[in-house]
Image (cartoon, rainbow over all chains, first blue to last red; front, side, top):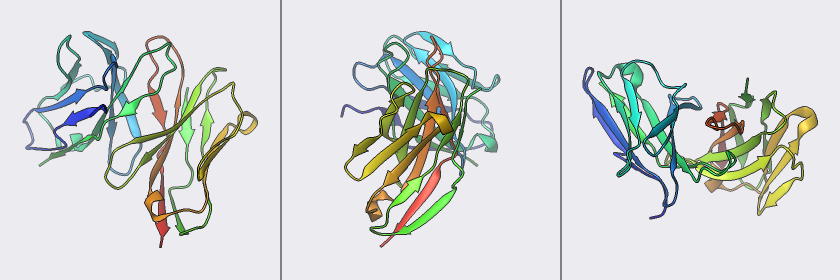
Length: 115
Length: 116
């Protein structure tokens, strides 16, 4: 499967727990983006990472949210002490990172439900 | 600032009708990229097209066509002879090419329902 992989596809957490969302980019892609889609809304940019570097986290809440893209392994979006308002679909996209003009390809998303 | 407006929240058409989805964008940049993505009921996002701001040629791909007009800041998407499988939410998006900041700005989407 050469596409962007995300897991889990569905995640249920109780308020106060931690959520970890994983994203494996397409083969050959070194740039990863995370977006959040609230119910009935468009996608909102959260964070942009390259291997071992956060390039732009301007869309990510300052508290409880963090992201990483280690040298080895998938990118992780981590949400600590989840609240009901975190319930959303979280999409990861990857790209080749060529001269700022390349196309982002999206994974299937992780649907997070906070009880 | 970048902004994408998809004024049509929901559209319903009968199978085999043509349908146009509108997209209007705002940007101060002279160089930018526009995209359309499809989100079927299964939830994933499928890339449909990318268009750069210097290329105003319309594009056709099978039953899909795109009309890019810089004069009106619009990038409309037409589906000809719609089919039930076209039922989905369609998102228009804009990116500003800038070192270290090429995230996508999405519109709120248009939900298309094709009735058999």
